Image (cartoon, rainbow, N blue to C red; front, side):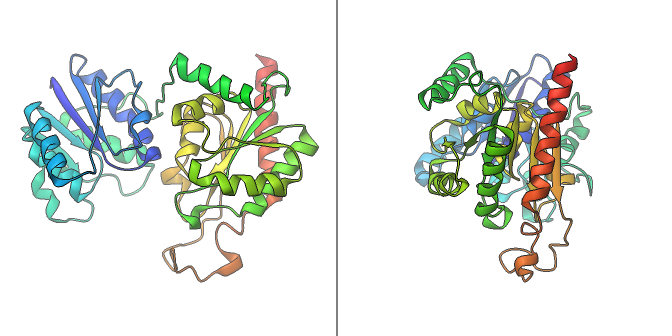
Length: 345
Protein backbone atom coordinates (compact mmCIF):
# COMPACT_ATOMS: atom_id res chain seq x y z
CA UNK A 1 0.00 0.00 0.00
CA UNK A 2 1.49 3.31 -1.07
CA UNK A 3 -1.44 5.71 -1.35
CA UNK A 4 -4.19 5.36 1.28
CA UNK A 5 -7.32 7.43 1.86
CA UNK A 6 -8.97 7.36 5.29
CA UNK A 7 -12.52 8.74 5.46
CA UNK A 8 -14.22 9.93 8.64
CA UNK A 9 -17.24 12.12 7.94
CA UNK A 10 -18.41 12.66 11.49
CA UNK A 11 -17.83 15.15 14.30
CA UNK A 12 -14.76 16.50 16.09
CA UNK A 13 -14.61 13.79 18.75
CA UNK A 14 -15.16 11.01 16.22
CA UNK A 15 -12.27 12.24 14.07
CA UNK A 16 -9.98 12.42 17.10
CA UNK A 17 -10.93 8.90 18.21
CA UNK A 18 -10.03 7.66 14.71
CA UNK A 19 -6.39 8.76 14.95
CA UNK A 20 -5.08 5.41 16.28
CA UNK A 21 -6.06 3.99 12.86
CA UNK A 22 -3.66 6.48 11.25
CA UNK A 23 -0.84 5.43 13.56
CA UNK A 24 -1.43 1.75 12.84
CA UNK A 25 -1.51 2.27 9.07
CA UNK A 26 1.68 4.32 9.07
CA UNK A 27 3.45 1.76 11.23
CA UNK A 28 2.43 -1.05 8.88
CA UNK A 29 3.08 0.86 5.64
CA UNK A 30 5.85 3.26 6.55
CA UNK A 31 6.34 4.52 3.01
CA UNK A 32 2.67 5.10 2.34
CA UNK A 33 1.11 8.50 1.77
CA UNK A 34 -1.88 8.91 4.09
CA UNK A 35 -4.66 11.29 3.13
CA UNK A 36 -7.63 11.93 5.41
CA UNK A 37 -11.04 13.13 4.28
CA UNK A 38 -13.23 14.82 6.89
CA UNK A 39 -16.24 17.08 7.25
CA UNK A 40 -15.86 20.88 7.37
CA UNK A 41 -15.00 22.09 10.85
CA UNK A 42 -13.23 18.91 11.95
CA UNK A 43 -9.99 19.25 9.97
CA UNK A 44 -8.05 20.77 12.87
CA UNK A 45 -8.20 17.43 14.64
CA UNK A 46 -5.73 15.98 12.15
CA UNK A 47 -4.14 19.08 10.61
CA UNK A 48 -0.83 18.57 12.45
CA UNK A 49 -0.98 14.79 12.77
CA UNK A 50 2.51 13.40 12.16
CA UNK A 51 1.25 10.47 10.10
CA UNK A 52 -1.03 12.42 7.76
CA UNK A 53 0.37 13.77 4.50
CA UNK A 54 -2.74 15.73 3.52
CA UNK A 55 -6.14 16.60 4.99
CA UNK A 56 -9.06 17.05 2.60
CA UNK A 57 -12.44 18.55 3.46
CA UNK A 58 -15.55 17.27 1.70
CA UNK A 59 -17.38 20.31 0.30
CA UNK A 60 -21.01 21.02 1.11
CA UNK A 61 -21.62 23.46 -1.75
CA UNK A 62 -23.33 22.92 -5.07
CA UNK A 63 -23.50 19.58 -6.85
CA UNK A 64 -21.04 20.98 -9.38
CA UNK A 65 -18.41 21.74 -6.74
CA UNK A 66 -18.93 18.35 -5.12
CA UNK A 67 -18.61 16.56 -8.44
CA UNK A 68 -15.39 18.43 -9.21
CA UNK A 69 -14.05 17.41 -5.84
CA UNK A 70 -14.89 13.75 -6.46
CA UNK A 71 -13.23 13.82 -9.88
CA UNK A 72 -10.11 15.27 -8.29
CA UNK A 73 -10.26 12.58 -5.63
CA UNK A 74 -10.46 9.84 -8.26
CA UNK A 75 -7.48 11.33 -10.13
CA UNK A 76 -5.34 10.83 -7.03
CA UNK A 77 -5.44 7.08 -7.74
CA UNK A 78 -5.61 5.74 -4.21
CA UNK A 79 -4.81 2.05 -3.95
CA UNK A 80 -6.74 1.66 -0.68
CA UNK A 81 -9.70 3.46 0.90
CA UNK A 82 -10.49 2.92 4.58
CA UNK A 83 -13.94 4.30 5.37
CA UNK A 84 -14.53 4.66 9.11
CA UNK A 85 -17.80 6.56 8.80
CA UNK A 86 -20.39 3.79 8.46
CA UNK A 87 -22.61 6.03 6.36
CA UNK A 88 -24.12 6.11 2.88
CA UNK A 89 -22.47 9.33 1.72
CA UNK A 90 -18.97 8.20 2.60
CA UNK A 91 -19.59 4.82 0.98
CA UNK A 92 -20.43 6.53 -2.32
CA UNK A 93 -17.27 8.62 -2.04
CA UNK A 94 -15.22 5.48 -1.40
CA UNK A 95 -16.73 3.76 -4.44
CA UNK A 96 -16.18 6.77 -6.70
CA UNK A 97 -12.48 6.81 -5.82
CA UNK A 98 -12.06 3.56 -7.75
CA UNK A 99 -9.40 2.16 -5.42
CA UNK A 100 -8.86 -1.59 -5.84
CA UNK A 101 -9.18 -2.08 -2.07
CA UNK A 102 -12.12 -0.43 -0.29
CA UNK A 103 -12.88 -1.30 3.31
CA UNK A 104 -15.92 -0.11 5.23
CA UNK A 105 -18.47 -0.83 7.91
CA UNK A 106 -22.10 -1.66 7.21
CA UNK A 107 -23.64 -2.29 10.62
CA UNK A 108 -27.12 -1.54 9.28
CA UNK A 109 -26.67 -3.98 6.38
CA UNK A 110 -27.80 -1.39 3.88
CA UNK A 111 -27.14 -1.16 0.15
CA UNK A 112 -23.88 0.69 0.79
CA UNK A 113 -22.13 -2.65 1.28
CA UNK A 114 -21.79 -2.95 -2.51
CA UNK A 115 -19.52 0.12 -2.49
CA UNK A 116 -16.74 -1.78 -0.73
CA UNK A 117 -14.55 -4.65 -1.78
CA UNK A 118 -14.91 -5.91 1.78
CA UNK A 119 -17.14 -4.94 4.67
CA UNK A 120 -15.91 -5.44 8.21
CA UNK A 121 -18.05 -6.41 11.17
CA UNK A 122 -16.70 -4.61 14.25
CA UNK A 123 -16.79 -6.05 17.78
CA UNK A 124 -20.28 -6.10 19.26
CA UNK A 125 -19.07 -4.35 22.38
CA UNK A 126 -16.11 -2.23 23.35
CA UNK A 127 -14.80 1.25 22.84
CA UNK A 128 -15.24 3.20 19.61
CA UNK A 129 -11.47 3.20 19.10
CA UNK A 130 -11.40 -0.60 19.00
CA UNK A 131 -14.42 -0.45 16.69
CA UNK A 132 -12.48 1.70 14.21
CA UNK A 133 -9.27 -0.30 14.54
CA UNK A 134 -11.10 -3.52 13.63
CA UNK A 135 -11.39 -2.30 10.03
CA UNK A 136 -7.66 -2.95 9.60
CA UNK A 137 -7.92 -6.72 10.15
CA UNK A 138 -8.31 -7.55 6.41
CA UNK A 139 -5.02 -5.71 5.79
CA UNK A 140 -3.24 -7.77 8.42
CA UNK A 141 -2.53 -4.60 10.40
CA UNK A 142 -2.37 -4.73 14.18
CA UNK A 143 -2.95 -1.60 16.28
CA UNK A 144 0.10 0.02 17.83
CA UNK A 145 -1.85 2.25 20.23
CA UNK A 146 -5.40 2.88 21.37
CA UNK A 147 -4.69 6.44 22.52
CA UNK A 148 -5.80 9.32 20.28
CA UNK A 149 -3.22 11.81 19.03
CA UNK A 150 -3.83 15.55 18.86
CA UNK A 151 -0.83 17.66 17.91
CA UNK A 152 -0.79 21.40 18.53
CA UNK A 153 1.80 23.64 16.91
CA UNK A 154 4.06 26.11 18.70
CA UNK A 155 2.00 28.94 17.21
CA UNK A 156 -1.23 27.42 18.58
CA UNK A 157 0.50 27.15 21.94
CA UNK A 158 1.55 30.79 21.90
CA UNK A 159 -1.89 31.95 20.81
CA UNK A 160 -3.44 29.98 23.66
CA UNK A 161 -1.20 31.86 26.10
CA UNK A 162 -2.05 35.13 24.43
CA UNK A 163 -5.78 34.52 24.81
CA UNK A 164 -5.37 33.85 28.52
CA UNK A 165 -3.21 36.94 28.92
CA UNK A 166 -5.83 39.06 27.16
CA UNK A 167 -8.30 38.01 29.83
CA UNK A 168 -5.76 38.68 32.58
CA UNK A 169 -5.46 35.00 33.37
CA UNK A 170 -2.02 33.62 34.16
CA UNK A 171 -1.41 30.01 35.10
CA UNK A 172 1.38 31.09 37.45
CA UNK A 173 -0.65 33.92 39.00
CA UNK A 174 -3.51 31.54 39.69
CA UNK A 175 -1.18 29.11 41.43
CA UNK A 176 -1.49 26.67 38.55
CA UNK A 177 -5.16 25.98 39.42
CA UNK A 178 -6.95 26.69 36.17
CA UNK A 179 -10.11 24.64 35.66
CA UNK A 180 -12.03 24.32 32.39
CA UNK A 181 -15.78 23.73 32.49
CA UNK A 182 -17.45 22.68 29.23
CA UNK A 183 -21.23 22.97 29.73
CA UNK A 184 -22.37 22.61 26.12
CA UNK A 185 -23.06 19.40 24.20
CA UNK A 186 -24.06 18.71 20.62
CA UNK A 187 -27.43 17.40 21.84
CA UNK A 188 -29.40 18.86 24.73
CA UNK A 189 -30.06 15.45 26.26
CA UNK A 190 -26.31 14.93 26.78
CA UNK A 191 -25.89 18.18 28.72
CA UNK A 192 -25.76 18.58 32.49
CA UNK A 193 -27.98 21.39 33.79
CA UNK A 194 -26.45 24.87 33.54
CA UNK A 195 -27.40 25.76 37.13
CA UNK A 196 -25.37 22.78 38.31
CA UNK A 197 -22.35 23.90 36.31
CA UNK A 198 -22.77 27.32 37.94
CA UNK A 199 -22.90 25.80 41.41
CA UNK A 200 -19.82 23.71 40.65
CA UNK A 201 -17.94 26.76 39.35
CA UNK A 202 -18.78 28.67 42.51
CA UNK A 203 -17.54 25.92 44.82
CA UNK A 204 -14.33 25.31 42.90
CA UNK A 205 -13.60 29.02 43.00
CA UNK A 206 -14.54 29.88 46.60
CA UNK A 207 -13.60 26.62 48.34
CA UNK A 208 -10.57 25.54 46.29
CA UNK A 209 -9.18 28.83 44.99
CA UNK A 210 -9.46 27.70 41.36
CA UNK A 211 -9.86 30.09 38.48
CA UNK A 212 -12.68 28.74 36.35
CA UNK A 213 -12.68 29.00 32.57
CA UNK A 214 -15.92 28.31 30.71
CA UNK A 215 -15.38 26.98 27.21
CA UNK A 216 -17.45 26.33 24.14
CA UNK A 217 -18.05 27.59 20.63
CA UNK A 218 -19.41 31.00 19.66
CA UNK A 219 -22.91 29.44 19.70
CA UNK A 220 -22.36 28.49 23.36
CA UNK A 221 -21.35 31.95 24.49
CA UNK A 222 -24.77 32.96 25.87
CA UNK A 223 -24.89 29.73 27.91
CA UNK A 224 -21.37 30.33 29.22
CA UNK A 225 -22.24 33.92 30.19
CA UNK A 226 -25.32 32.78 32.11
CA UNK A 227 -23.28 30.23 34.04
CA UNK A 228 -20.62 32.82 34.79
CA UNK A 229 -23.24 35.25 36.21
CA UNK A 230 -25.01 32.53 38.21
CA UNK A 231 -21.74 31.25 39.71
CA UNK A 232 -21.51 34.36 41.86
CA UNK A 233 -17.73 34.43 41.54
CA UNK A 234 -15.12 35.45 39.02
CA UNK A 235 -15.06 33.17 35.95
CA UNK A 236 -13.57 33.72 32.52
CA UNK A 237 -15.71 32.97 29.49
CA UNK A 238 -13.55 31.84 26.58
CA UNK A 239 -16.44 30.35 24.57
CA UNK A 240 -16.03 31.45 20.98
CA UNK A 241 -12.66 33.09 21.65
CA UNK A 242 -10.35 30.32 20.47
CA UNK A 243 -9.93 27.93 17.57
CA UNK A 244 -10.04 24.23 18.33
CA UNK A 245 -6.26 23.93 18.57
CA UNK A 246 -5.94 27.13 20.62
CA UNK A 247 -8.59 25.69 22.92
CA UNK A 248 -6.51 22.50 23.19
CA UNK A 249 -3.48 24.59 24.16
CA UNK A 250 -5.51 26.30 26.89
CA UNK A 251 -6.93 23.01 28.19
CA UNK A 252 -3.39 21.64 28.37
CA UNK A 253 -2.62 24.34 30.96
CA UNK A 254 -5.55 23.36 33.20
CA UNK A 255 -5.34 21.13 36.25
CA UNK A 256 -8.87 19.87 35.61
CA UNK A 257 -11.53 19.62 32.91
CA UNK A 258 -15.19 18.97 33.72
CA UNK A 259 -17.63 18.49 30.89
CA UNK A 260 -20.29 16.49 29.11
CA UNK A 261 -19.60 13.75 26.61
CA UNK A 262 -18.39 15.87 23.70
CA UNK A 263 -15.50 16.54 21.35
CA UNK A 264 -14.05 18.93 23.93
CA UNK A 265 -13.89 16.09 26.45
CA UNK A 266 -11.86 14.00 24.01
CA UNK A 267 -9.58 16.97 23.35
CA UNK A 268 -8.92 17.28 27.08
CA UNK A 269 -8.12 13.57 27.31
CA UNK A 270 -5.74 13.84 24.35
CA UNK A 271 -4.01 16.76 26.09
CA UNK A 272 -3.60 14.51 29.18
CA UNK A 273 -5.55 16.97 31.31
CA UNK A 274 -7.19 15.28 34.34
CA UNK A 275 -10.91 15.26 33.72
CA UNK A 276 -14.34 14.44 35.03
CA UNK A 277 -16.65 13.32 32.21
CA UNK A 278 -20.44 13.42 32.60
CA UNK A 279 -22.31 10.75 30.68
CA UNK A 280 -26.05 10.35 30.22
CA UNK A 281 -27.50 8.44 27.25
CA UNK A 282 -24.07 7.52 25.88
CA UNK A 283 -22.02 4.79 27.51
CA UNK A 284 -18.42 5.55 28.60
CA UNK A 285 -17.51 1.95 27.83
CA UNK A 286 -17.98 2.93 24.18
CA UNK A 287 -17.35 6.68 24.21
CA UNK A 288 -15.24 7.28 27.30
CA UNK A 289 -12.10 9.45 27.33
CA UNK A 290 -8.78 7.87 26.38
CA UNK A 291 -5.47 9.54 27.19
CA UNK A 292 -4.94 11.29 30.50
CA UNK A 293 -6.37 10.50 33.95
CA UNK A 294 -10.15 10.50 33.88
CA UNK A 295 -13.19 9.80 36.03
CA UNK A 296 -16.49 9.14 34.28
CA UNK A 297 -19.84 9.58 36.02
CA UNK A 298 -22.54 7.45 34.44
CA UNK A 299 -25.82 6.22 35.89
CA UNK A 300 -26.21 3.36 33.44
CA UNK A 301 -29.89 3.86 32.67
CA UNK A 302 -31.31 1.83 29.82
CA UNK A 303 -31.98 4.59 27.30
CA UNK A 304 -33.44 2.18 24.79
CA UNK A 305 -36.72 2.51 26.69
CA UNK A 306 -37.20 6.23 26.10
CA UNK A 307 -34.23 7.53 24.17
CA UNK A 308 -34.13 11.19 23.17
CA UNK A 309 -36.10 13.29 22.53
CA UNK A 310 -38.97 11.32 24.04
CA UNK A 311 -37.44 10.64 27.45
CA UNK A 312 -40.22 10.07 29.96
CA UNK A 313 -38.12 10.07 33.13
CA UNK A 314 -38.42 13.81 33.79
CA UNK A 315 -36.36 14.80 36.84
CA UNK A 316 -35.11 11.23 37.08
CA UNK A 317 -33.41 11.31 33.68
CA UNK A 318 -29.81 10.26 33.33
CA UNK A 319 -28.22 13.73 33.48
CA UNK A 320 -30.42 15.03 36.32
CA UNK A 321 -29.34 12.09 38.47
CA UNK A 322 -25.78 13.44 38.46
CA UNK A 323 -25.49 15.71 41.50
CA UNK A 324 -23.24 18.70 42.11
CA UNK A 325 -21.84 17.01 45.23
CA UNK A 326 -20.63 13.93 43.37
CA UNK A 327 -19.09 15.94 40.54
CA UNK A 328 -17.38 18.23 43.06
CA UNK A 329 -16.04 15.21 44.97
CA UNK A 330 -14.75 13.67 41.74
CA UNK A 331 -13.14 16.98 40.77
CA UNK A 332 -11.30 17.18 44.11
CA UNK A 333 -10.18 13.58 43.77
CA UNK A 334 -8.76 14.17 40.31
CA UNK A 335 -6.99 17.38 41.33
CA UNK A 336 -5.56 15.88 44.51
CA UNK A 337 -4.48 12.74 42.68
CA UNK A 338 -2.66 14.78 40.06
CA UNK A 339 -1.01 17.04 42.64
CA UNK A 340 0.21 14.01 44.60
CA UNK A 341 1.75 12.53 41.46
CA UNK A 342 3.35 15.89 40.58
CA UNK A 343 4.70 16.30 44.11
CA UNK A 344 6.31 12.85 44.14
CA UNK A 345 7.92 13.28 40.72
